[in-house]
Image 1 (cartoon, rainbow, N blue to C red):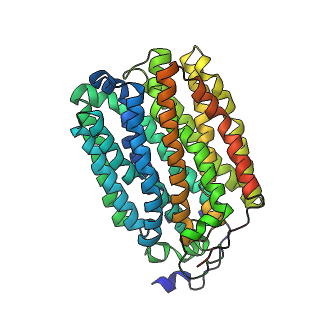
Image 2 (tube, helix red, strand yellow):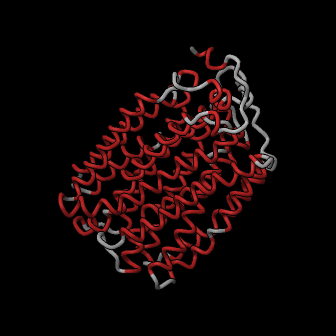
Image 3 (cartoon, rainbow, N blue to C red):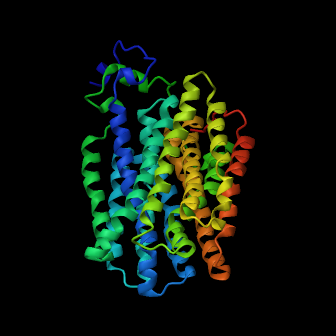
Length: 431
């Protein structure tokens, strides 16, 4: 059956005309990321409720966030390697099962320590989402479509962030905050069943046409052999990705975990009223996620080099972030929403292109490991950001320092990436 896929198939030029099975895979990745972010963000949406019940200060909440980031840093590098060894089908199923159980475990928490334990377990499981997702994209999409595909499945993060503040009030008011964790954690197991049933590598997929398979495999084949993991740290291409993640991931974590309390403190909103502003911000983020990936893919289709297309898209996104520094001083809720939404949209567009770097610069067998290394470094940055945010807010009560850092990070990240890989030359990986 595997041979019959490729027999007599010419490499097609236009992707949509050869079949759409790969976009079904992308849809599954999108739904997984949506669920991932619902489970991840529930703690931030319920933060005012839990602070009222348990009397947490900002440092205590920062420690709970820190425990998630610590586990995420550990789990990212572990799952990055596991995904390369186990494959996207089994590895993704394992990660999702762990995070589903951990999300539901929040319902049994009765102290900050209990929440820290539950968040640590959640971080371990959720760390597998992006290594597995990017691995699946590398298996199912040629280079010219990867940024767009990653942008689409990464947009699930924003849908999850949109849905959480909308469904949380209903669940909390009618059933209590513990049921909110139980319900949203249980959803992941439906996805696991579907993923395990549907996902196969392209050559193992019975309903995939020979034309679509040829299109998916239109890039030059990787050299045979296993990739050695530790030598990857010697490549500047690895550090271009990892430092980029270190500089921008903490900004996204800050927005994800502190925006509800920012609107509560600065604009007097609560569980029942900050849902629409948060939803609007993440709707804009969705536009940025898909748009940033679409832009570089479109430029490549027009004949631009991968180097020029990716960096142009990231530059456009980076230039949209600095206005967010004005957000703490804006009196209007919707004025702040527009500034923050522009920044989060730019983050997601920048991130969609950054996520393609491992598959652009490394053989497919190394993609999961590189994603894991970068995710770990990004999560370490998030750990520092969590502790710093808690300290700043308890010391000054002002969000301004955090927004200044957010506004300046993306141009600096792009500069570092350009200095490390000025021509996007692929790494010569030891095997």
